[in-house]
Image 1 (spheres, helix red, strand yellow):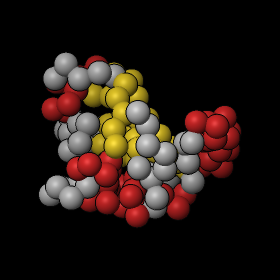
Image 2: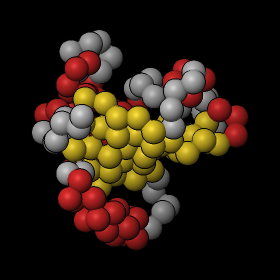
Image 3: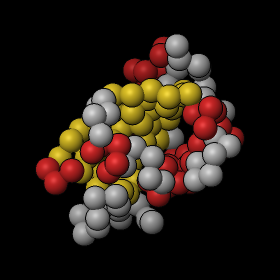
Image 4: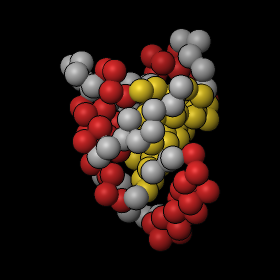
Length: 132
């Protein structure tokens, strides 16, 4: 899976940097935006943006996972959810959680923006803080 090559990454990077600056007080240290693969299935997602760029490997692992995917959207799951990622990091198929934990991140907040055909744009914000 590769990042799209035809968008203005400087502009996106600046926007995400401003967003992280605004969320610093809340402890957010990373932002990932996933979107549907236009020619893929409902389960296929790709990384549209990640900031800071050092988290790209962990973001790609998140996009490749089934977590928060089509099954999540088919249930009555909320559009906004938070999770302590350390609780399920040892489970099989949770490589993305282990990668984020290795970067010192403990909590993820996910916000979904539903699209037609059971797809969604997903924004993930990561923090080393434990949210309660």
